[in-house]
Length: 128
Image (cartoon, rainbow, N blue to C red):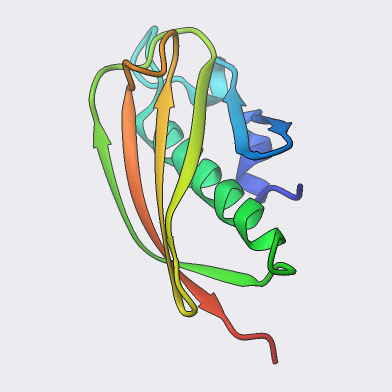
């Protein structure tokens, strides 16, 4: 799976399983540091965006792929991300012919205790 260039800056890796959306893992380090000992909010938002894109590309692969363009994003921060690896995964909640909606969640120790969530809307671009 090809990730956006921003993913390299964040140091993310992708774990794939046959029938599930990819799991995105971001290590803690200086590149994602906000205030001492905590993740930067922009790094968390970037991780969520990457997870949403990966989930949507995974879902579109069944249909042969396609181009997408983000048209809306809302991020809810729930707790501070600490100095440990952070995980994120997206779920496609609606895959229409022109618009796709994806929910993404980021967590550290327990998926039931997220540090942030995002809702993203994508335009499915027609191939010329």
